[in-house]
Image (cartoon, rainbow, N blue to C red; front, side, top):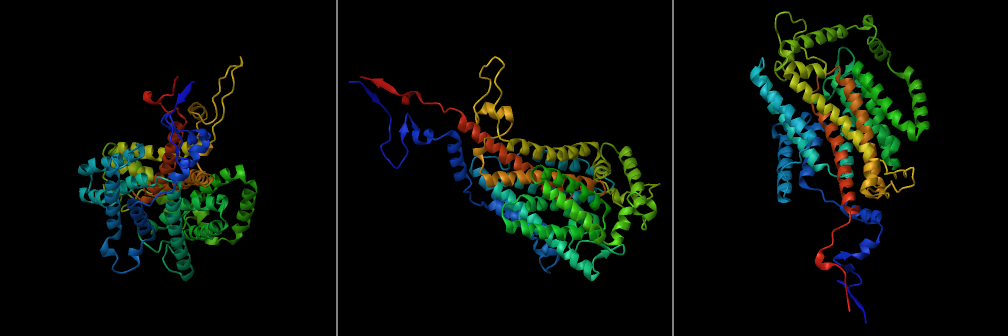
Length: 502
């Protein structure tokens, strides 16, 4: 009598093991197995390094230390950053990993810091450049590495985005109240931030609100939960009002560019919303203050510029180019353009008001190349995320009828289409990552336009947008790698092969 011998587990409730493999799991279609594994994976715990990073972000953007006496001396932001970095090091080293996750963007930020450090001896004020590096950019490097290492799931990306949206709405709301009360106004009637740091200057305030208004608008348009959409709509309206009250010409141009990107992506899925937005915008034009339009007219009409800032900006452009050409390799030191007082300088004690001239004139051509690399990588990361979100498509058969195409979900099909199998992501996670990629593209467009009129290369805003862009791509790349591994046939140990004997 012929008999087959199997390596079979006997428990009905447990796995059914054949030749060292669970045949119950193997019997499921590969997409179902991957989906099951993904559902288990998203039941994540909140590591301490991630929680400390959220706390640092809240302190950085809400800035309670500027409002509550006594908090400044506690250095809460520095303490939360140190705690987050220590927790990240412990977690990753205990898992046998490097202290921080290093990719091209992390290396780029570190390189930019290295260029700043190497140019300090050539600075017109080495002490001032050292302050910019040690008090600002070192923190940016460390927190950026912390974000890239901890923003490891769609849920975390969404939470980080919401913190920045809530903080921006809070700053905007306070600004609207101040404007109504006639407080915190400069140049007569321009709103500045009610807190310090990167929100204080009217142009910088407008830049930040334009940047973080992008994900707010995408939540209004794409989120599936009505309560979140309603809350986001209210916050977007407050941000818009605050941008108008800053009367920032760069903010207006950035808002238009950012809005165009939002409408581009929205028109593909909800064209009616775009039409409604255009109608609402036309109706809102007469409601805007006349002083706002008077200042916007000065973008093209120099005679409307009552303060002379338009002509001063043009002189600063010439001055920035001249400083760069005189110091193309080392620059004059990070943060030192406003202190440059060489013979013939017309605009003294002023920043460049252009991010590219800021980098070029202060840290030279190598800093400019590195910074440009980071900006390009921010856009590229989001475009890569959108490519990965596309569902794989079958290859077409050959003209001779051969089987040239691969089965859906196999590595060959993924390589052909550039996407990941739909089952590798739940629908909510896919929606989060899609929204993140599109909103960060819009945010980068708005930031890029605004930064042409602001010296913000060493401010936090860009590096947070870059981190969110990179995080979305890295999450999708990890899911794609897991899907490929799951689709690949597992090797069967030689000692556990099926054997037939009499």
